[in-house]
Image (tube, rainbow, N blue to C red; front, side, top):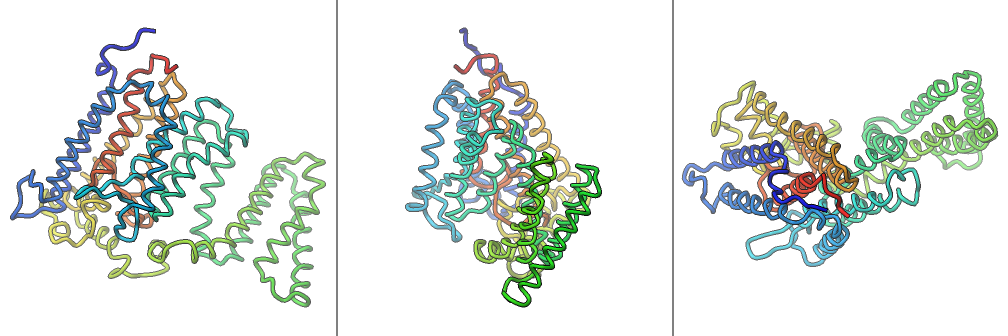
Length: 474
């Protein structure tokens, strides 16, 4: 088959233009974030903006190399790339340099490399390669389990570093699974778990359990339109709950109200199993199973939160939920970031005129909190433009993904969109106090060579695949 001679003609110019605009805007904001009047030359290599300029040039060279490689290379070597990067994630736990309590970087002289930034690329490629051979089969466990494992393996190794920010990003790839046919019940259950996690920290477990039971009864009525079934089911539950409570009160004396509720739900399901199976009430059974899983989940949150999360992560979640106030300690970054963004008003204070930025009130303002520089110096208008550019890029990439003839290219394209979206949402959310601080960069804006290289390769692999969309990969 005839292959394209001029690959540059097929590259999406709009995506490349958006990439260049974001990278250049990011460089100017890094300059503003670390501005030093004594060293004001843009290309001073002793300053972060000088180093970022070198990385931008290197990233452009890397982008050119990425698109000159034959598109079939990414298809045939997807698993090799994934395996090599997973191996690096394992090796960094042993040989990596520890920075700020996380062993996430390889050190080569004055240069450091963070493999988790590149492992996202390998994971997206491997997921695309796997699903390409098992089209429209995400309703089967034989496909769901391996696909999930492809995502969870690098996520687990990243969590061991520990780098919770990058770990969360891997879960963005479940959006891809949903797009490719994963049951909406499984997808929605994941979202509900996140919501329940925060609700459990805010409200009493027992009260939350009763609310869930009430919602389940309402959903059963909506699904069956039979109020008698709901009343009988509620009556069976209340009777069993009373019996279990009395047994605990006078005999066992150690269960506690939460366990009484959970055991009662299990026994109620057993008592109602005749209806579930003989009447073929699949909808009611699914709602019941969701209820059981939700109650079990909220009762396990306390242990998970108190024993699995690092102390500083717990403090950040508590501050986000208003359960704790520490504007001079763990919440200092977010508090100063919100002050900085709010002080920008509608049009901002002007470039290099940000007082919060100039006097270094916001730590990590050139990396994780780069958005506060945008908010202070460019104001609401500048922030709106930046978010608009990101939204335009994401929508453009979705358009490109949907026009792919190759399943592999489409899935990888949605992987790119998912990873970029989660990075953008969480980073900006951190800066304005909507999500806990987990330390992930703003794509193409934040200071750092590893993140810029990783995002550049991630994007331009897809642009290379899109440029050859009329060709067969095999």
